Length: 390
Image (cartoon, rainbow, N blue to C red; front, side, top):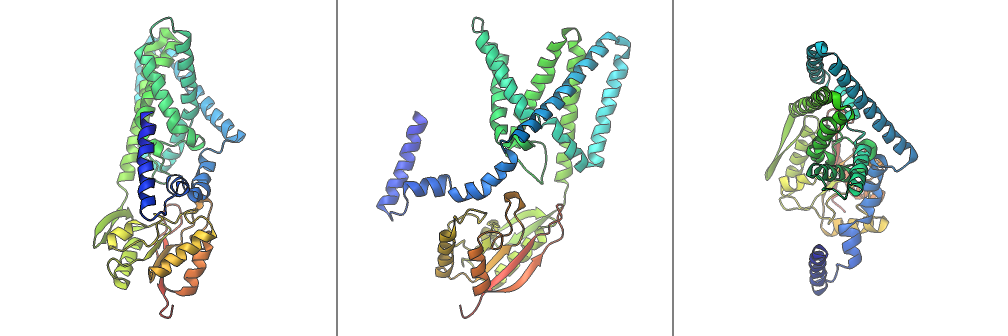
C-alpha cells in the first residue's frame, strides 16, 4: 500500500504540474505514450517476445524437450556416481578423466568459441521449466510439512527458484544468460541466481537420489559446475579481447566494434563539418549517443525511432512538422534492416511517410559503408542534406 501511495502521489503531482503549466500531459498520454507506449509495445517489443516467449504448443514442447535432455544428463551423473561408489579402485581414474574432460572442454572453448557457445545453450535452456518445477515442488513440500519448522535452506532454495522463474518466463523459448554479445539478454544479470540454483540441484538434490553414492555424485556435480564456469569465463575473455574502435567527438568518446567504429566516426565528422553546435539534426532510427558527442540537438521527443515510436501516420506527420519548424538541415539514416523486429530499414520498411519526405525535401550527399560484421550485414548510413530551396 505504501508503494501504491508513493506512486499515486508522484504521478498525481506530475499530472497536476503539467495541467497548471501547458496542460499537454493527460492520463492517456502518461500511460500510453510515456509509461507504456502503445506503438513500441505493439511494433517492437511484441515482435521480440513472439520469438522469446511465443506461448505456442510447439514452444512449450521444445522447452519440455530441453528439460528432458538435461534430466537425462543429470541421471547419467547419478549413474556414474553410483558406479564410482561401487568400484573404489576406479575412483582415481574417474577423477583424472573428469579433470581431463574439463581441460579438453576449456581448450575447445578457446579453439572454437562460437561452436562452444552454440552448444552451451543446452546447459541453460531447460532452466525456465526446471525453476518452475523446483518452485512448485518446494512450495508443495512446505505446505505438506507445516507441522515442522521450515528449513532455512529450503526457504532460500524456493526464493532463488522463484527469482529465476521471474527472470526467465518472458524469454523461456530462447533462454540464453551465458556470454553472447550478438544476442544479449537481461537474463545475464541473473547468473548469480542461476549458479545458486545449479549448485542446489547438483550438490543437494541429486546426491539425495542415491544416498550411498552421495559423495561421488556431489563430486561429479561440482566438476560439471566448474566446467560451466570455466566455459563462461573463457567466452568472456574471448569476447573482451575482440578489437574495438574508439569514436571521438568534441563532447565525448564511445567504444564501438571494429566493423561499426569507422562508420560512426565518419558520421561524426560529417555532422561536425555540415552543422553548427546546438543545431537540431535527425539521427534515425537510433544513434542517439552521437547527439551528445557532437553537441547537436534531437528535435523529436522520441528517444529513438524504432518501429512503433511514431505510432501511425498522424505521428509521422507531426514529426515532419516538428522537423520543419526546427529547421533541420541534416539527417543521418541507418539503412540496417531491423530483422529482430521483423521490419525493414527506417523510412523504407516502416515510417515510410517520413522516409518519403526525406527523399523529396533532402538531397542524398553521401553513403557511409562499413565492413561486413559477424552477421554478414555491414553498417550503412545515408547522409541527407536539406535542399536549398526547401
